Structure formats: C-alpha cells, structure tokens
Image (cartoon, rainbow, N blue to C red):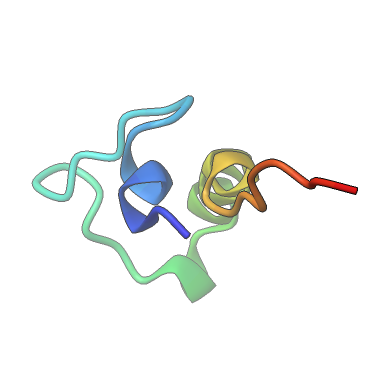
Length: 47
C-alpha cells in the first residue's frame, strides 16, 4: 500500500485547497475513488 497515491495519481490532491469533509462532498469522493486505483498493489506473482 502506497498511501501517497491517494494524493497524487491521477489527480493532485492539494490539502491547502481541498481539506474538506469527504462525506459531505460527492465530487471529492469521486476524485478520491479515482486516485485509489493505484494505492494498492500485489507485486509479481510467481507460480
């Protein structure tokens, strides 16, 4: 898990600009969902 991906890929999340309560902001939730796609990785699987 690379937590920094929540804030940089594909959308840059500037906490100075978007320090909002996510539960009350649908568009911010969707942006975080997009960024979440690269947060988790499993690496190479060897059989």
